[in-house]
Length: 250
Length: 163
Image 1 (cartoon, one colour):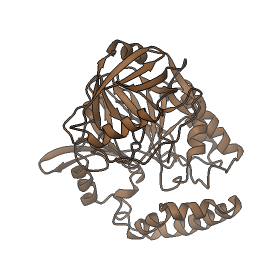
Image 2 (cartoon, each protein chain N blue to C red; image 1 turned 90 degrees about the horizontal axis):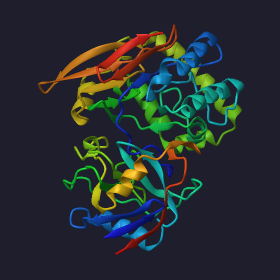
Image 3 (cartoon, one colour; image 1 turned 120 degrees about the vertical axis):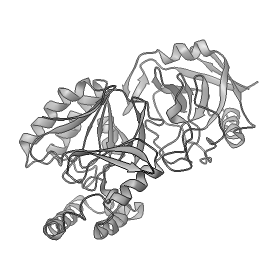
Image 4 (cartoon, rainbow over the protein chains, first blue to last red; image 1 turned 90 degrees about the vertical axis):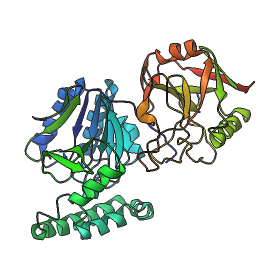
């Protein structure tokens, strides 16, 4: 990417984190909650971080459905009012590209990214890279995150891409019933390795849909790991300011 | 020593070729070729940094040369009025864009040779014109062409020259 948006990233003071909204036309009440949130609670934040799976699925920036356009408009409206918007790819919407970023005025963060959050170095991830016990998923991920794979995928007509995605989603829904709860959660060893490699006292991620605050001790030092909630039932966000982080359900 | 002639005044920068040889040479190359002439400070965040060297007035991005290796492990710190190279999330992706710190940005410093820990390479400091930097950091900014924190009125580098 030639485009060099937002680097270096500024220190963040009053920031809000969400993930796993899985926005789609079939959950209109959640879309309403999200649009209200953008104009309400999120509006007073300096920055909003969407750590992956904003959309239920994303076939490419050329998927100009009225629904997708409504989300773009809401996000553009948000950034035009002065708050910064940072996105991270999730396992559903990793094909979000430059056209979407420019249209919404948002910045794409790599996964993982370290930010300064009120003086506390904080590691941000979507969270799927921590689920290393799900070997089948990790192999799939390696395949679809390969730029060569993505290039050939995006070169196909939109209708074909949507067919492929629909097929994958049907397959995935079936498999999920059979996967054990354990392998779909983060692997402790992988989390600890992440803390070792990225010496941040705090980590924030989503993906597992198991909202909680976890404390880890690695090499004698304490770390906190915040897991964000999904938006299947209602909205939920993590707000971080000078007093620390706290979870709020809408 | 490099003088940046800007719409707000002259900023003089002393490069540290001993601690950042590749970065200094790369920067001087862009100065000599006239790359920085008629570019803007396109990203200005008060209390943080002012960034430029990549866009012409009107926000068209200029093409750049080969990325250089990150020399941030040179003990130089991202303190106020130092100059450092901007880059993408790839630690070794810096080309022409640079930024001048307007705070002591410790979190930008090198921590480790990992993707997250590399930090941003400081390669010099402002020796004259810190008042000009302070003027620039306070200009009104907004969103433009999909970018955030863009000065509403262009802050232009009319000429960059080696002195």
